[in-house]
Length: 266
Length: 298
Image (cartoon, rainbow over the protein chains, first blue to last red):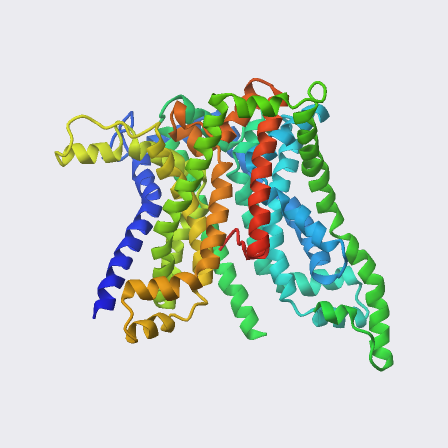
C-alpha cells in the first residue's frame, strides 16, 4: 500500500518535530544535576550543588518569592475581574458588549513590548514604576484575556435555569451565583486562574520595564543572569520552573477532563 | 441562553414573577464588566493613545520621527529583518506543524492525548527557560558541538549562537504550538475519508493532499500563520538573547530607544508603526476569515 509509505514518512517527520519540541526540557534537567563547576556536556557526575546554590542564595530566593506572591495576587485579581466581566458578556445583550469584549482582548493582541513601554511611561508619571502594586496592575491586564476566554466559554455552556430556579425560590442573585453557578463552572474557573498565574509568573517583558532593583521578579533576575554569563545555577532555576509548569499543565488537563465528565453527567 | 433572558413572559404568574426578578438583576449584571474594562482602558488603551500622540508631538507637531525611521538605512534594515524573520518563522512552523497536526488527528484518542502533552508542555514552559536551553544546546561548549566533535564530524566547535540561525531555531520552537493548535482544531473536523476516497478513485497521495486535504485545512493554516507572524514580529526575548548585532528586530529597537535612551518621540513612533502593522494584518484576517477563528490556546 503506497498510502502507508507516505504516512510513515509524515509520521517520522512529525515525531522528529515532537522531539525538537521536547529537546530543551530534556537537556536542561540532566544538566541541572551536574557536578561540574561550569557548563559541561555530558555532566561528569551527579550533584545537587546548583539547587543548593539557588535555594541558599537570598537574591534568587527574594525574586522567587516575589514572583510567587505576584503570581498569586495577579491570579486572584484577574480571575475575579475576568469572571465578573464574563458574566456580563455571557448573559446580557447590549450594543456595548462587542466593544467591551474587544477592549478586554486588546492585551492579547498588542505586542508585549508595546504594552511594556506604554505602561512604563504611564507608571513613571503616577509613581507606580517599581512598585508591587504597579506589577500587579500590569500583570492583571496581561492575564485578564486568558481568564475571559476560558470562563466565558464555560458560562455560555452553562444552563442558566438552574441559577434562576434558586433566585425564584428566594435566593439573592449573588448568593445563587456563588452557591450554584460557581461550583458548576469551577473547572473552567480554576483553569483560567492557573493560566493567569503562569501568565504572570513567567512574564518578563512588562516586568523588565515596571520592576526596579527592589522588585526584581524571577524572570527579570534570570534575564540579567543570561545576558552576563552562563551560570549553571540557572539550570537549577530553569528545572524548578519546568517542574512548576508540568504540575500546572497536568492540573489544567485534569480539570478539563473533569469538566467534560460533568457535562456528560448533566 | 441569551434568547432565554430576553424572551417575553408567555403565561402564568410564576413566569412574570421570575422575569421581574431578572429585570432587576439584569441591570447589575450589565455593570459587572466595568471594573475589568475600566482597568484596561485606564492603564492600556489610554496610554496607547498617548503613545500615538507622543510620536507626533514631541516636542511640537512633527513627522520627523517617522521620516527618520523610513529614511535611515539602519532602521529600515531592522524593519526588513523583522518582517523577514516573521515570514521565515511562519513558514518553518507551518512546514513542521502540519505533519504534527496530521499525526494528532489520525492516531487513536488515547495516543492523541499523550502526544498533545508533547506540544502543551513546551507551550506551558517559560519561553525564557526554553531560550536558555537553546543557549546551552547551541553554545560553543554546547550539546550539539560536543556531539559533532565526538562523532568526528568536526574538529573545531561551530559557532551557532548569536546569529540568524539561532534566532530561527529558538523562535520557531516558541511559536510551533501557536501553529499546531489552530491546524489541529481545523483538521479534527475534516472527514479524512475524503482523502481516502480521492485516492481510491485514482489520485496519487500528493494529488489527494493538494486537492482535498490542503484546501480544507486552509482556515487552520491562515489562522496559525497570522498568529505566528504577528507574535513573531513583536517578539523581544529570543532575538535579544540568541541573535547577533545584525539580527536586531523592531521590538529591540523600541526597548532600546525608550528603555535606555529615553527617546520617547522616536521610540513611540516605532512602537506605533509596529502596532499599526499588527492591526492591519488582523483586520485583513477579520475580513476574510473572521477574528473569532483565531484561537490563542488549545
